Amino acid sequence: MHPLRQQQRGRQPPCGHRRRCAVVAAAPSSAVVWQQTSNGAWVASPRRTTTTTAPPAGVVHLLGGAFAGAAPQVLYARLAEALAAPPSWSSSSSAGGGGGGGFTVVATPYRLTFDHLGSALRVRQDLREAIEEVAAPPPSSFSPSAAAACKAVLEGQAPLLAVGHSNGSLLHAIGTCQQVEEEQSANQLRPRATVLISYNNKAVGDAVPFGLLDRLRDALSSSSSSPSSSSSPPSPLPAAAEQLAAQLADALLPQRVARAGPAVEQVATVLEEVRRGATDFDPPPERTRAMVSEFYPRAARRGGATSLRTLLVRFSDDSTDETPELSRMLAGCPGVESIVLPGTHLTPCGADGALLSPPPAALSFSQPGRAFSPADALAMAAREWSRAQSERDADRLAQRVVSFLRAAAAEGGGGQMRRAPL
Image (spheres, one colour):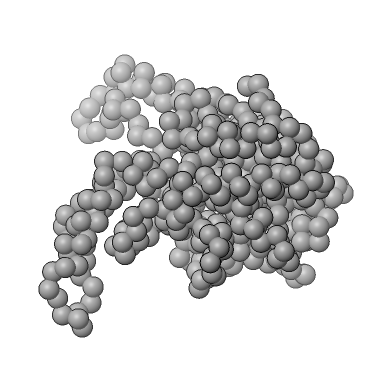
């Protein structure tokens, strides 16, 4: 089997649930409608008014990072709303006050897995299922703007675009390589432009610190080697493995991410793959580098309206980012831009990025019998400043992404790789 080909497996909803379409209050914007498809994808679209006559701007496929990508309607709501809000919308929460993109955003949650090839294929399948459901003929529960955009994409009248963060950017890159290899396959949904934010292609040993997976694997092996009846149900994790699993969750999940429940559920998927003997990602980082170096440039060099434009984004304070390596692999490819913005690895999560970190230790005045002190006031001020800074960084990112995708949707392809100023 070719390394980019993956047999289709039994379909599962991305986070263990299939839901009916429903309008939800995923974010407070009055300019955006949030809905959900039956396969679990979240759809954000511009709220259509009676005066709206412009053709659909296109559809943006949004993939979040590991764990956080399981709850995009919570942890990527700010970015999604900036992309979906109408261009005429003027708000401090929309692309830095510069108006929204007017796109329909389809965010596909996904199960975190060591199998990157299979995951990249499944999110593309989930995207097609979601777009076809939204574009289905009336009667439909979806907003008119979402239905029109998805129908236009399926008919080739509007572009498909892509935005990925961290592990989501890796899946988008792998998916592009898979599509190049599947060039003769019909019925493809190929993005016209892709934004890869905080690209990450680390080995398991670097992605999970302190050797926790090796220690967890040893604990699980010890448990499975103990004598037991073949008819007995699987035994629960041994105490040592439970303790290591908790440490694994602490290492992988930003603190307080439990507010987005589906993200926490993904730890169980990781543990099950470790139990089955997973040792590294498939493909491992070195094979992924070779794959991206060989196939991704072909998508950028197709020519005409089918060529792929790419924006590489990294942040000034992000130790996990591997965008410079990706930039070197794509050097000389047409239509590739590379920028550096102020922020951290959690900047795409907007204000929620600040909430994922623990509060300052001084913020303990809620303890019974403890008086509010000047130190508490300073800690609260520092936290509010951090939140405001996170919002500014997130809005700056949204503004650049919206601007890039607007231009790509209007023009499609072109240009040599260049490094844009801050």
